[in-house]
Length: 171
Image (tube, rainbow, N blue to C red; front, top):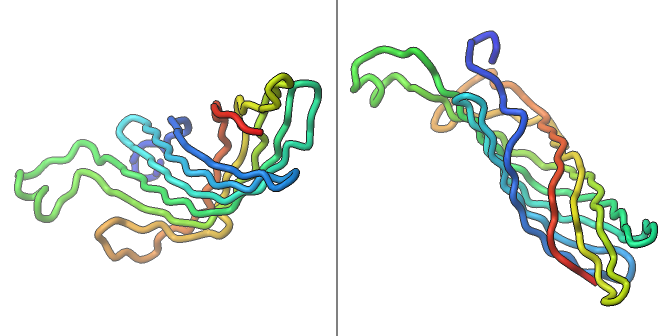
């Protein structure tokens, strides 16, 4: 992107998600869904993922629980590059010339994380407080340009570290 003066990939963004888990004795089996968005100048990246995971609350120190989690799932990413300093007739931008390029990347992912939880001994429930983790594509997949047939598309293994504040409770 630097070679083509197309700006930078956003490094930080906003994330929201939801999850549901069921305890089977010690392990938790669950699903997570999350959406992320970030922008840098005019470039925008949006990501959505769905994972199935297994976790445990076995690591305890007093009222704190460290819950390691391993998840697998799918991730879909769109990246929009805004082109700058363009000139032309109005109709050119409707027919042949574009002022942005939208790309997509889909991949299977692995999600490794640790969730910090607090335990309420009086009510026998725990509350998630935050998660720290890393998501990565399992394979290198090609990027696609939306509504275009392209050759020589780069292959990429997407990965990102994340920190999420969490809310909820469980038994």
